Length: 92
Image (cartoon, rainbow, N blue to C red; front, top):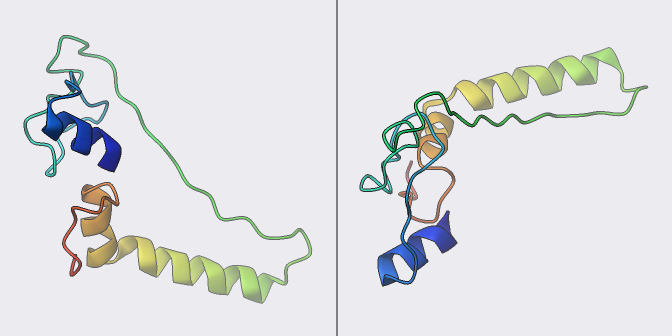
């Protein structure tokens, strides 16, 4: 995202559309693909946390609780909304 924004701001690149469902706060002038005539297109991503097969259940449960708390925190939701870009506020 940072490279895209840098080049788009310089005029060397014209961003036609973003693949997200909504416009991003850091690039509000770039339309979504749906706004640019590709109504049914949407891109999604996912993440995973893996552990070795023999990891004790207590450790797996501890990791699960920690990740659930992290992913549901206000700070994480704020960071995700700006795509982990260097333009996000440090306090977000």
